[in-house]
Image (cartoon, rainbow, N blue to C red):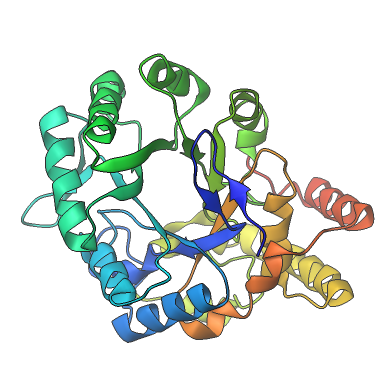
Length: 322
């Protein structure tokens, strides 16, 4: 795969990377339901073998478990990818998730992630959410100091708006932003993507398939059978009246994919990569069988006709959150 430089860093990343959210398994607030660790490891191995060179995880995914799975998958491999993780979301002994950007907490979180990932340095450490807003400066200053100390190579933010990024950038340069971006979630196009492009901040988007809804594999039956702890059960886009409209969009993606010999998932991901502000897209994986269905997104170039058809469908259905 071709590689792109991530913001102001020396990291050259492939257009698609491995998302490890669901690999955290079940039993926590933002779970995707039960997950087999062997499947997670096999997915990571195949994705790396096929050329992906970065993994995005977070301490809170599975309350630390996702990072442990990533470490297991990378044990003994010579072709180690870049590993990105996040701080700011913490949990207590009962699994209740909280938010903090206090320096002492972030230092503890960083050390815990280093232990779970079994690495000496984190390639990209990101503030997961800008919460509490009043503590953004304290949190970002701490990340900058951890970078100076060599525990982190690069620092980034996730889910920040423009004013919050400006506050952070006044303290230390931002390597990257991680926002949600897909055909069903385009609000970042108005102000956020133009800002990061103008300021040479890299962008790795999450949920380019809108949490699997645009993958082409989602059906009403599958949604009905979601595990009780799958957070998508409460998402309006997975329920009527939006669900029918969303599935009609997937059929258009399927038609476009046929022209290019690609899957609907690859079309959805390629659409996000078409935006010049986007460096890479995080592709969530739960098993090796999913890897083959997304690889082509890295090289797929949608035609003007493809893009026009998608825009017309979105306008007609009023599907987009803007």
